[in-house]
Image (cartoon, rainbow, N blue to C red; front, side, top):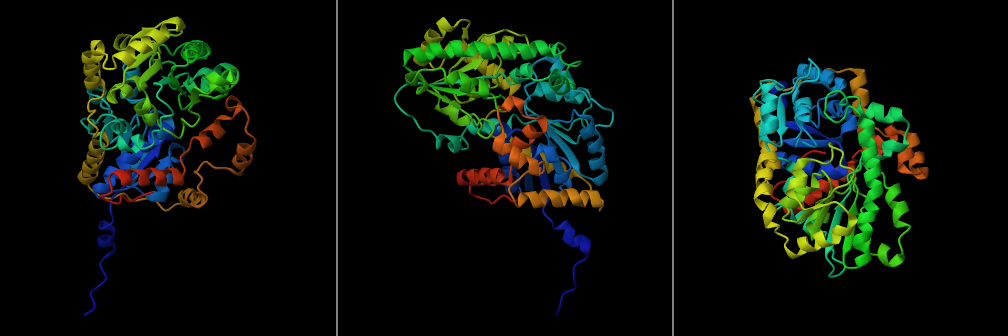
Length: 472
């Protein structure tokens, strides 16, 4: 006997819940966000990854139950959070850089910058940030700030560490010295000032040491100019293999120009990581025998998670970059002449026992969870939020929304992000020095593509093939 057709609402109820995560920098954020997506898939939740620049189109294309942003500090996202609330979409946040050591920086990211901000779940790296969010009633309800740690740092622990250990190649027996450059603002020194004005506008009056942001720009510019002197001390020994890793947002022209001045025998000993935007630092840190950081750098914490010794180079000492935290937790090198001896000490005593207790205390305080299960914790919090919600979202059928969704899906057919424009194809063919590129084109270049997401998912399934997470 033919069974009656189930009612429409019954069919809808059987649909798997879905999450949309917006990814900012591919090299820094994609694998961590991909790991959250992988864990969500294991919990029966579809997850889609899109570049941050498609913050509206992705909503209409996937109609998710939950959306995860990397910040909610802009006016447009505040306005849109209320629109999503009206649809019934849960709004979440996980900061890219969630340490927020400095008090005014923590105040900025913990206090709603606009009265209409709506946030259902805030995933925090540490309890200090969580407590500040609860005190300032950032979330609704206020207790929906949760400490999960930093999901991308799971890749320094088993089993996820295997993703990057498999990629390691050692050229010879010489120790590997990783030098992390952090001069992300240096290029503003050579751009029209309005570029820096626009970039710093959200923070300049709210975070200490950013009021005179051009002084910080100059500090980055001058510090970058000082770094080759330290590198040449390492190179002239001929004893090390050096990996030079600029920050993913740094311009590379400066480093190319400097490398071109080196004699061939020294140039052969140094590798410039030119694809830091696409490749996270895990392989380099895991491969390194010593990690050298330029003043304040999150990679110091990452090195400790990977059980690597660290050294800090003091440069222009701008207070925003030269923090007490890192001057206290690593040997400090103040002149190029002392760098080699300090590196040799780290090679001879890689445990750096004089710092180990303070480093553990630091990790416990500022990375609330660093056991390698932060992505799983994040996924469980998202799942709980979805299950606690009363009803599924309902999306208005408007032409503008449909057009955005169709554009996103159409561009995916050509492996392009939502921000693609035809002129980008031709500009990419003739692009010159990076610091001369328009900001919108830079934004396009850093956007993840469908192939990036597919590759991340394949890589994670090779380590944990038990399930086949759904989503794009």
